[in-house]
Length: 297
Image (cartoon, rainbow, N blue to C red; front, side):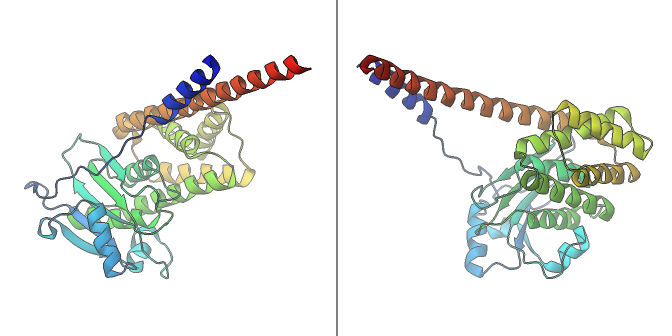
């Protein structure tokens, strides 16, 4: 009886922490300094799907947002992508005061299958977008890559100061992040931790040559005990050497990189804790099985 109670109690704790969330955004309030929030809607969506996206993004009054389409032409302009691409993932972008930082939320997490919140944050910082609230949504299952194009278009529409070379390398970063997660069998948190740590070291060391970048990449791979193929290792070095050539100042966003690193470490620790819990459950049942096995042997 005591054993049954213990098992029930353990499973009660395991499954009791279920919560619900919503965007919590208020599009009825207009920021007079930066203007209306901008909603970018994938051009490949049907009218019904567009309406679903507006609902997912918390748009209750379309007069209080500026809505613009994101097309295949935009994917060519902002990330040098394929002109035949279909655009499904959409986003709402609200510019914020300097120092606010990036607040990114995927409001349809079941439909954005590859790109994570922290991957978006990393790519946006690389592109030069530092202070904004961004919500990403899709009514169908997609990787999430095309949302980055929409975010760039929205920000460019409002600000007009995006550097196309930086947006292109930021997209390369996002592509490499999702590729590493798929090809190398790394989880998303580990990939984001690697990219963030490399950026932090670049901010600290300000590498002057490709060899310096290569050393930073090698050091971080070793520190995190990540083994990559020679091809992927070179892609990683190429990516960060492009950033060096563009003279991207990661020191200016160091606090945001620190925040991403802390968030990722918390997630990794949480996963490790959960794995430890379930291992204890397995060990518990095994001990019961061994007890009865020995009892009747």
